Amino acid sequence: MRWQMMVAGAVLLAACSKENAEDAADPAVLANYVPPFVMSRLDYGGVVERRFRRLDVNHDDHLTPNELPKRLSDRFAEIDRDKDGRISNDEWSSWMLARFDQQDANHDGTVTSDERERAREQKEMDLPTPAEEPDNSATPVG
Ligand SMILES: [Ca+2]
Ligand SMILES: [Ca+2]
Image (cartoon, rainbow, N blue to C red; front, side, top):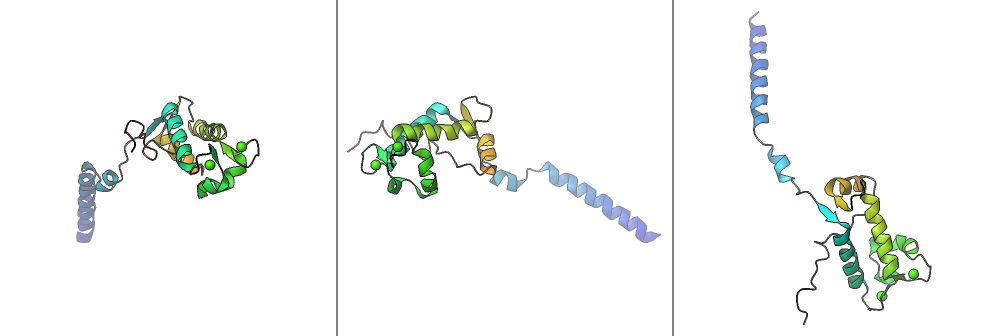
């Protein structure tokens, strides 16, 4: 009969220590904390514009297949709506904004972390963010 008492005691002890552990914040959760991400359609429009300027290395206001990033190279035909073999600023903006609207699940004009996460699960492309294309227009050049 004695071992049964010991088992009961051990179970009780385990239950207590589990409770204590839940009181403390989980360091793993804190380490992985990412601040919520919100991007408005207006911000995004600026980002897309700046990315176009950056990608257009020969400044002819068009993106050719060699100027398109690799991850977008198989979308070239899709983006080049008039099929003239190059992507105009209009074609680029409307395609990129269509990606934004697709990820803006509740159509409130912003894309949040949750919506980004959902898009990722659906293997949608990551939208470029203001952090990736900072607005340097305020800083004097040269
Ligand atoms: Ca170009
Ligand atoms: Ca075109």
